[in-house]
Length: 93
Image (cartoon, rainbow, N blue to C red):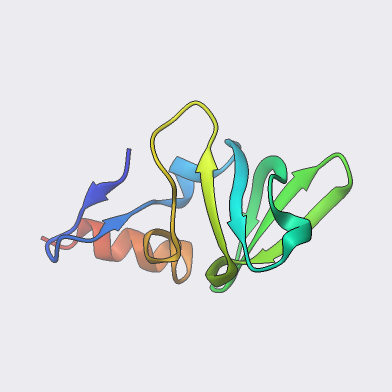
C-alpha cells in the first residue's frame, strides 16, 4: 500500500487512509492502546478517529497504528506532515 519515494521513504496519502478502519497498536498514552476507529480527519501533527466514544484526536508522534485488513504497522515517518505535503513528496520524480 505505501509507496517508496525517491529517498526510499514510505509515505501514505490522505486518500489511502481516509475512511479506513484503523487500530492503534502502540501508544505513549495507555488509554489509546487497542483503540479502533475510522480515520476521519488529519492535521500536520494529529489524526482524528471516529470511534464509538465519539471523535478522538491523537498525536501522530505518539502512536503506531495498523489499517485493519491491510499490511504492517504505520509509523510517524509514513504520515508526518500535512496530507497535501505528503502527496507532493510522493509525486516528485
